[in-house]
Length: 66
Image 1 (cartoon, rainbow, N blue to C red):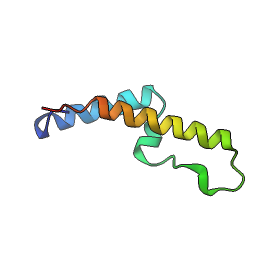
Image 2 (image 1 turned 90 degrees about the horizontal axis):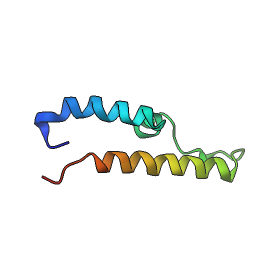
Image 3 (image 1 turned 60 degrees about the vertical axis):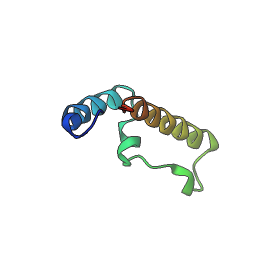
């Protein structure tokens, strides 16, 4: 993302990239952290945290400083 001028194409690109990496639902907020459920294992929470970090990194890497 450089700015408003390329937002629409960036949005399409980042959506496809997040989907390919299987973290789109985390980035969109439809797959939320399961930490509030007592029946969820530590491993499942850790897996979600890894997905969240991956999604965040992908988005952050796609934003230009310019």
